[in-house]
Length: 141
Image 1 (cartoon, helix red, strand yellow):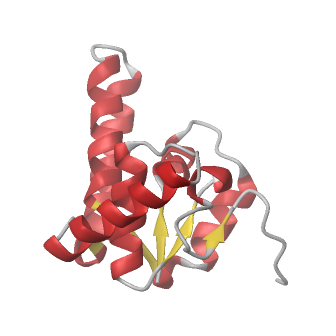
Image 2: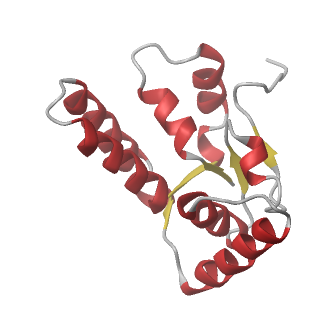
Image 3: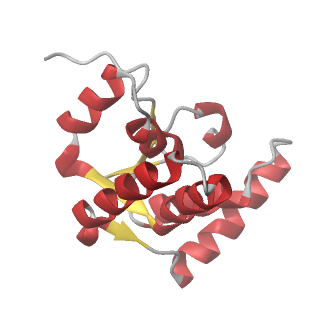
């Protein structure tokens, strides 16, 4: 299972998303999962820009993601909350801070034996997750 970071979902919602990212999402669709934290981050971003016209389009895009991934959305469980504590402590000990949402996304992926697709590889380097950048992946067709 490959969990998507907020920046991957956000890329898909752009008016002109990078073709490589969209192709990667299509190719791996059956393996993909979302955390409720990603949904929360995008919902917050949408609300921040209201009443901007973009908000309606982005809201529709987020609703489509939620509909399509209805059975592949994972929440912060007690197990993930404990993993979050470990992940945040590891990041702090390494001298690399981590945002609360990133820590939660990583924890949800870790307890579900997932990989993480993100553009910000360096932000997650202390998580011990297998990281993938859909912007950089070179795959055979």
